[in-house]
Image (cartoon, rainbow, N blue to C red):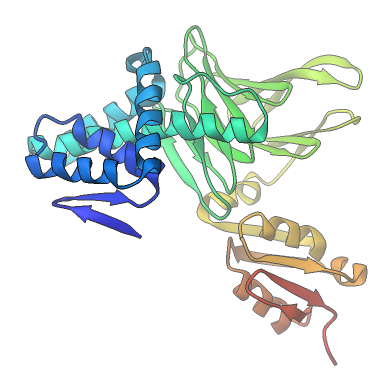
Length: 341
């Protein structure tokens, strides 16, 4: 639910609303009505005042924001949009784009800090914004060097402050990186205790409990980090997949990169995989979970292309082809059982 004022939208969530108000009030065309509406919002609830103080504190900490790659990318995108449009953008439209950049920068830093405080990990510094997706969401953003990052479901990436290298940290989940070439500054993705370094390439990094995988679609990357046999460094070529599991040696093997990166188009492709593995993958993209109690059902091989998050359509396909049936089901989970009859 949202409330609105002329030409603008403010969310009921105090944190989101505070960031939106902050961005709006930075403009030089703020209306008197807007300032009055802000005062009413601020005084309406102590949670609003607390959220406002937090956003201001976060912004005050962003002393290096102007040089931050994420903010520079937002600014570059706004300028590019003004050039690409068929008609000149007026001052108010450019201001709206700038405000969007401010909201992204402030909420990215604020929610990133809150995320890590909640999880018990060390919070990143305010100038290192954290981008996240919820279960079932996918998000793409462009960096200052024109590299593009696409986050998969339930994922988070931190954009570190860049100096001699372009460094990001995958904090959880999965991300696809399309790297702009810049031989003078390596592109480094840190994931757990390992790092993936590229100059100009496209690759996928996925973190799972006790497991890291890297799928290289284009170019070459170098992976470095500890292994059961000591610190190692290897180079990958396009069309291969790297897997490192706890207490296991590193494995690099050829893969179908189109299949492995199909999630970018909102699809999952399976070729004879056991239903239990298929269910695990489908569950990553949906709040409504599938579960299997019978291991014989879980061992059923499944092939097909399915849309992410489409639980009902997936179950209907299983029933149509006689691979499984539905037992108990509600709005939170669906049990898969042996086909009846």
